[in-house]
Length: 346
Length: 246
Image (cartoon, rainbow over all chains, first blue to last red; front, top):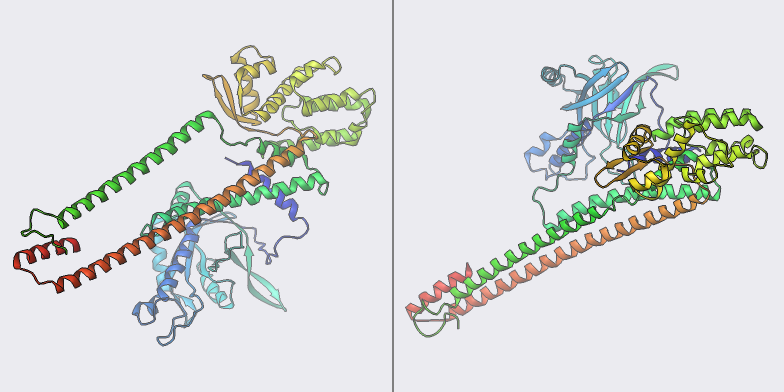
């Protein structure tokens, strides 16, 4: 409902950035390609990484641990905290003109001895995917980690014979609560002359997230999966409330930015920008968001219904417990089926 | 927002024109600006120094006209129509549209009667045509027309130029909004804590009950072993003991 918000916020943050408050970006790519990343790829990579990581964590006595992880396998005698295993895979998609759209990805095995990806498997997978998605080409590869490394260039070069300019999608699996953007970076390779020697180096490119409605719904569903045992009512309530809490917190921080901006404008620190003021006034006019009488009626009715149902459920629970108690009491202190004058318990 | 972006180039154009002309030549500029179909923002033009110079001179009515278009409504115009230059139909239409925007500022549901009174439109059909063609198609207003209840629900209305005092009230509204959402966050956190503590209490209670059941069972098994009884009631004992254990 608050659709005007994002654009105002963006404008203000851009206005506030002005004096080089932006983060330092690595040299950005100059190839002029626009990248569109689908969220399915991100979920795939993160799922792959999580699976491998959880499979390599259990005590090294289990035989599965060693076979499933890539690269850093643990020794059977020592369970030290490992550097998280890196996972590798391929990304596929479509390139139309200057727009590169990454739709899907699949996993690959990395052979640490030859520092290359399993080529035969890649080609087999490529064939299979071609049958289902004839338009998709191999656009590049992905891996996890915090930064692009030197050894990655080797893999990159190997892929150059499939695609003359492959992409390298890097996911940073470390969770940083202060970070606001997605920990995904897309690198391209460019030939730069360093110290007189032309070398291939990775340069970062910007990307946008693009999705279709079906994908958005399914990814949203996957992202909101609760723990499988359902948990008690408390954990479900907690999960739901936490979601609402974070959403409201984000809204709160943006309103605060607007508030500061207007205060500064009033004090005169910032020149008045009329179009922004007009937009803010139109935004504020939409409050209160819902306040018709009909809403109150419906809301109260639904609230009462929920309370009534939980009351009924509680009632049923109590009466069944009471019933059980009475049965037990009767069987325990049953005076008709025993012989003799005294009860079974002294 | 789209309205703002659409207007941006017109605003720049008129500001440039206004700064080039002076005095009564501005009359043309003002007339053009006020009848332009897509321009709804006049505060930039009002802040051009050449325009401000008109204050107090014989052409001050131009300035008043601009101000009327920036902040005023159709009924205000009718009150002081004698002092201002006559308006061409384009300008009248625009002023009426701006009136709708102002009305949308205060209420979200605008009854047809009030609208008809403010805009001097006599029948519902004309009013609806005006709203649909001239306001909603332009995108300055978005909402639903409810003919049964004879009202117009406004979902979104573009902003008009700010009156000088409005900035303060906007800041106040934002501050209220902030405090409400802060309170909401706090109450959500409390609810979370409450849910956690209640589940803790529940678990402890369950554990206590089970411990007591265990104790009772142990005492019972003690007692049974120390009791020697004739067969019939031993059977009864066994049966009832089994029942309670189950």
